[in-house]
Image: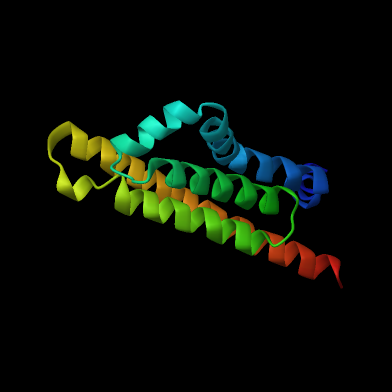
Length: 139
């Protein structure tokens, strides 16, 4: 009985929606913050050495929100996951450059880089799960 309950939960469309939404909370909130607190986001871009700050801010918001929308609506999940993964990779390379620092700053940057790497794995797993769910349902 418990086994069937868990199988139903894992196979449910509602559960799949919740999983995608939970994965995307950080991306959606970050994308919205970049639009709603534009000046604060510009300051973040400048602090990270990204110029022109307005272009990086708008591009970031567009990638975060459009990639999230693709995953949330379960359409072209591979593309949304790819967009967000590339965004995270470039964030590591351009902002969380732990190899350039020492001490606590290096440690914090490393933690962010590791977190981003883990989320990239979660995005890849989501793309794979979406593909397999659609393949199974089409049979």
